[in-house]
Image (cartoon, rainbow, N blue to C red; front, side, top):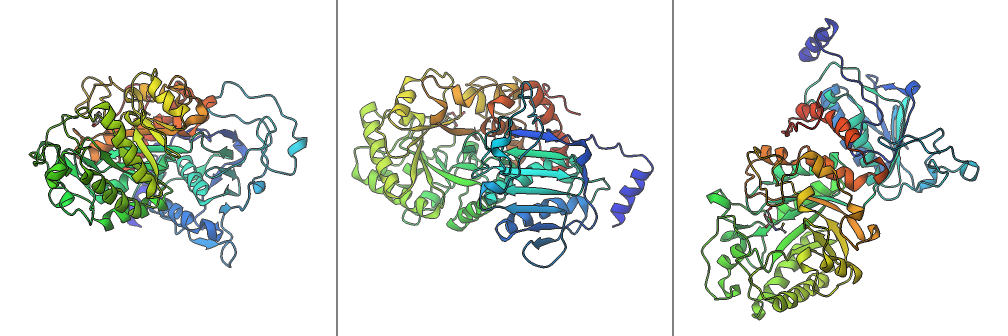
Length: 552
Ligand code: TNX
């Protein structure tokens, strides 16, 4: 309270600059439709409450948790069905889309070339989901509608996930000081108007390599928070590699006991117990983020071979590996024990994982002849399918036969890739992680202190300037499941370094995954992103102050 009083006094004395006003379109990723109403600005009153129906209760509690520290307000969460204050913040999970009221006026998405012509609304009057062209806008699995009026804020969605994404938009519409962990004297004003928003792609993710350097549970949870802010809904964990095995497997205890001890450059190793992993999965689930575990096979397996030498081609344990080369290790594809091992590992990992995906790696097995590699991948795919999970693999698995639902993660640098296009023709869907755009381990500039440059330098503009729907020749947008930004950690050793490589490129890739292509506009993005610098600073998030962004 003393602190609050002091800040209030400073404010009264005019010692604090007034916060830059936030506009309704200042959201990353850009919403599908934004309709500002300057008469509808809303200021959070001291007695504000969050009213919510049962399905949205957990999202409302999380929202209250983000708003309480900086505002210092109690922000009680009350059940819309029960007694209690009728708060001005209302969150509703509606059973069907039909409850989202129609927009009137001419919507203006940020960066959209021009307002579209007025639509004939007769057909949709009374229902609710008209867009600018008079077509219905179904909010779907992840969409939401946010209305800010002079008397309150309402978020409507069909699912808790949609409501959750809406609350991230709400956070971004408050002044940057909302990110402060301690009370700030501030007018908590939200810009008036309506946003109707939903994702372009279903899969929007980031990958963290916890094998080259190990990161503890708390670091991973913090990464989940970063994803959630930008409406990313998948966290891919690269759990195994030459330098370390990071996930406990009960039937193969030496994987972690022996294989978990090492890391690049002699750094301390580590691994997740089953409970650690469950904690990550549950924390992510609450934030509507699905964990995608990767067990990298048949290459990138030196740590496993140290633990179980019978899986090595020469049947002798290699020395532990702490360098950064790739492509030298592999499981013996001609030994049946290899397949028993794969079955045990993917079986246990699948059982621990509620999400639908299991990533079997497949990259850079340079020493395995093409025919053996293909046969291995086909058996491994079948073993994953037998667990009930959907197979994901790096695009090197493309030549292997299709298996139901198979997803290929493309990390090339040249969109001319007939092998991948062919896998898509045979039924695969694509997650796009182009190395020269989406790789978070690439340096921003020649003087970036950490990172690689084999795929070139990736500044923020490069991270933003590509179209996932039209990137790989011969792959139609309908076959694109989404985007993912991988962070390999050969040179990344701390939480601050993770953040430095993620910010501001992660929001750039998040926007490509979420926002309609019609909103794509570098100058507009750079300006919206600039407003996030003060938010990251207030939240204690390290970021690269990229010179191409007009930071305030
Ligand atoms: C290639 S991308 C790899 C990783 C490295 C990365 C470094 C991919 C599927 N494999 O093993 O960490 O380059 O940028």
